[in-house]
Length: 282
Image (cartoon, rainbow, N blue to C red; front, side, top):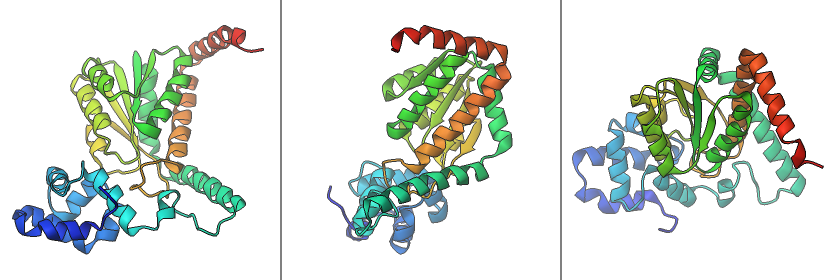
């Protein structure tokens, strides 16, 4: 489907909609520019409908789901350069581009530091410290963050695994145990396979933790501990930039905190890993 004005598609389908779907349609038409910045939970709450209604509505219009609807709608009403970076201008020099990207990333880190709930952070660190196994999961850019977390936490001597395949993620989650931790990473908080994995793990008694920007999003409903990051970048763009940096910093902080709590055990594990990797370097 090409870039579109969602209001046009909605009006075409409007006569065939049920009353509850029309209620949602009315809200979207009146607030089209705002909707592209809302999570599915926030839209459902503001329109006074269920999340299921939102999903069905988007699919009826020909989209794969709400995220697809937002991205396509944004491409129709937002300047094209904003889909690359929210502050980018056609006249920007290379130096200006670097400055804007660096500043956006630094702002994301600073803003995240200001909003992270210290109590939630400490609970997450304690859960990871006590875990017999840790699984990190995420899609796309969040999957890369999950791999980075695996790279760090495995050095602490805790069995650690990063799961970036959606099918294996669900299989793994179904088999998790009460003394294990599943940490899901999703900027939007609406990545279906990540949300479903956390829900399955939670049912098995495992501790579930999420890192997301949106406090009211599906992922928070299946997470025992919620850690929020903040970045200015628009949520309708599928490529994470500032949020990815903030996620990395938050996980780095958790790594350091857990290592501190493990004390001698972590020191010994880190030393063994370093010694084992010596032969790989000149």
